[in-house]
Length: 245
Image (cartoon, rainbow, N blue to C red):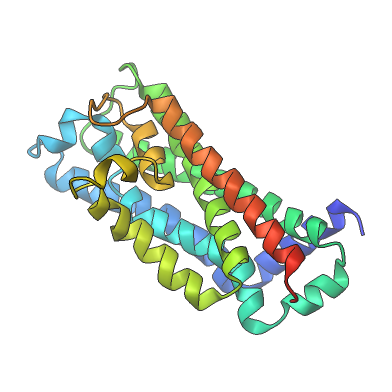
């Protein structure tokens, strides 16, 4: 079976399973909608949204990226939960090719979600409080915001392939991204290590301002996240090859 066949098979699954295409759509709606609501309500009076424009622009992302996590989990976890992974591997016996199809689809979906979410967040901010894209760091912030989504999705897809369990992946990854890493950055003695967690590094890459507490630059933050994505993708492949379906 060719790689194109594997990708086409994943696309069919994605478009026919409602949960798989609704979840990324929800990510876009949450990111854009919450950003618009917060900026309209507090953008002109809350100075924390003005100190670093990225705080206000990507406020909704703090909620929308949870749906991105779920998208990555569902792309492979749903098959483990239903047992259909056996049928999928029977159709595409070469596990590397099967997994590559999922990674390609996940990356594509993540890019589309990133483009729509970042565009929506910027339009919402521009329509409510105004936006100056000529500021230093604005272009980098946009690029990082778009790439954050496919990187996070691949990390969650790879982690789910390693766990081989939908419930465990949802129970571990969703709260970790939504609350866990935020709390860790507030704990003295742990904060320094928490900055190297993938979502923290990716979010820092989006910020306009430098934070002296963060031990790396903005572009390095995106690189840190990319390394996590590569490690998760590789770990998922190793697990898929070593274990029975």
